[in-house]
Length: 427
Image (cartoon, rainbow, N blue to C red; front, side, top):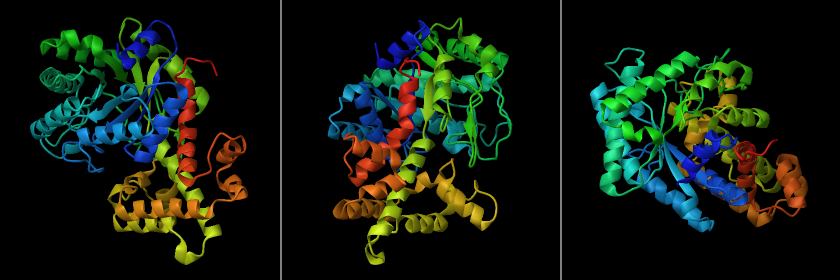
């Protein structure tokens, strides 16, 4: 039995356990996730989103097999067993090609699904919730489910043909926008229970009509809105009393749990409540690169204290210059006057800055920053000033004060509440 299947089995038998999914393609975040899993004695679930990794390379420049090799290479370097690495594909469907006709977009989605399954990804989120150019503005459940069934058929055929393990699936028509809300949020209502039931029924019927009834036990997750989200400046916290009716819809589904998207920045108690309330899969992404940015900006301030201007990496300035020169990833998201936009570019919860770490100039500055600080050494009082949690761990003998490990440990600070929440241990 796979680790995912075992977790679902345990959860459905009454053990309040779950799994958190690391939705980031950045190698430093991947390394942090693997090191956290090693410390916990757990498997690690790492998911690539369709806009990050696709058959054309996505914004990372990586195809599914290439991203797999990156992750497994990091696992090897960390001496983490490959069999404890679980890979998933998030929002797989026509998301990247919404400006095309439905048939053209779905043809590309067919190829996308095949590339993920043939590369051995064990968890596949079938997301056909978004309308294409010739679709109505809102798709009904039957259309979405029919397209999901088409992609499932592709996935199953590819798995049999390539000899890879048969994947587990996630479905759902009420899917949050990848990476957080675009607009400023007000009140946020959970998915109504009757709507979630209709989603399950539509997918079950569509799979049956496509001759895929036998696959239903491998549909492990349903994406619904538990009432959690974040935008640029605020976080909407989970309110468990609002989901009492929604939670009951899984009572008669022996293999199905909820999957919660956009759980970034939820407080530890709320993460635990989500798992207890059957959101057994917690997705996190921007909060991890947000934590990485916090660490790197802190180290950049330390660098300014220790080195003369000609020797500095000027990482923050380099990022700002690149974001202004190439505004496509933030300009449609951050509103307001120039100062408000500048603040958002650097510090917003939605962390549009994450799209720029892979640029050569930015990555070169990041590496120069780390090399500079390792060369001169970072005085402990400065670590206390800018990275106080890491300071405490260094003082306790739990952390080496190298610059790269300070960054990784700060990312793990954002992961530790998730590890605790899914462990089944009461907080």
